[in-house]
Image (cartoon, rainbow, N blue to C red; front, side, top):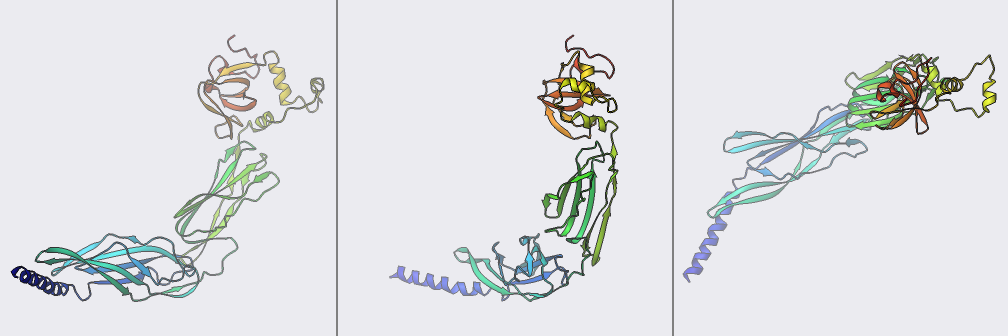
Length: 391
């Protein structure tokens, strides 16, 4: 009988102590607001949406549910809401914590928009009683004061508008500008900064009678940077420059279009360019006797001159001391056409200054003379006999 009475009193005491503990939670344990960094952005201009939650004496779960956001076709929120550092301060017996979550957004359609999201979360508070402590959780639904947006349309664009909107920088370059006719050039266009850069229309170098061009391709995509490249090939030394490129972007800090004009880009050619291009002409199928009877006005071809100079020793062999690239012309900036592994045997065909024209596995190219071992490293002299390797 005594045991039953004790148990009943214990339950009454436990139930009686829960009501005062619940009353210790403030009537408004948290507040939430939403705000935008720029209430009047231009169409496609990036701005920030910030969710602020202030708690008083309670904790909240990390998972938050934000609903009631605008239609994605009207307002694009293109990054998650990222947590910012928590701010804490003491107010009497309570600890106030300010949490901020920020996301990037942009308006896609001009007009007025109202942001009135609803927030669902769960609060947590440690409860104390005669028998220890426990965590009490409560679901909370909050409707926040609305934030107003007036999305402004872009002014009528110029013909060379590429579609980029924001605080952006444009860089256009051409490499290399010292070359051999037939080398490949790359026209690089880099756009970086905070802004809209989807579906850009990048200007291209147009094709000309002595200028071979390829379409512009996107080669790098990052959150705040886009890089494009176009391959261009000057076919002749008569091409003295790559023409200027012009493009416009919309600068949201100025509220106007900005024109970027770069170029023209002057070109210089190596003096041996004509000689090198001849090395890559296909061999004629005319019989040897007919070749030797070439027209005096035209003179012997490059292939014929090489045969005459090297007729007595057609197989000058040397070994590569290191892996090296064979190039179209005797210059470091010339196009690399194939690689020669270390310890490979090559046939030396001709020499220009410190460069050797070699043949390796039925491919020809120029390599530095220092890349070959003696005795073939010297290569054939322009007006002297060429000795066999090992002679």
